[in-house]
Image 1 (tube, rainbow, N blue to C red):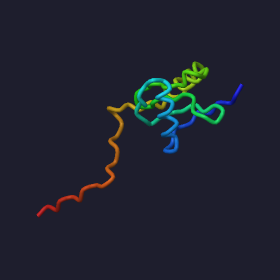
Image 2 (image 1 turned 135 degrees about the vertical axis):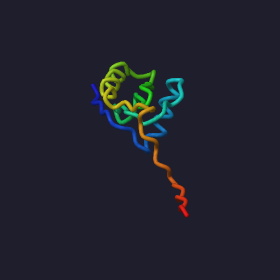
Image 3 (image 1 turned 120 degrees about the vertical axis):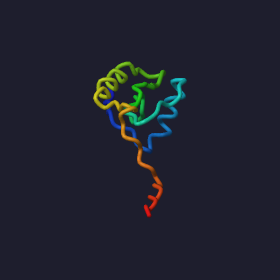
Image 4 (image 1 turned 180 degrees about the vertical axis):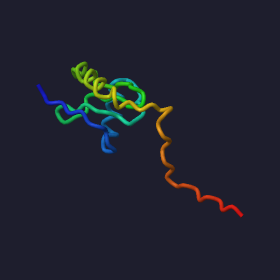
Length: 97
């Protein structure tokens, strides 16, 4: 039995998440993602925004999906209550005269 690591996805995981979504015949759900890593590869992931799962259909992933659901339960982000993302290039404020 391989060890399983659950962690937040980072910028380096984009390709692996895209590959996983394609294997699962789905679109990659919106991030942030909690991923299950087994044997050095991401075998399943859950969107912390929508709760949608993607998993490798060629691996045994039912237990990974259960783990992800349990751990993501307290981490899910409510998109309506989440603070808006900061603007990358804020506009300068107009001076009142």
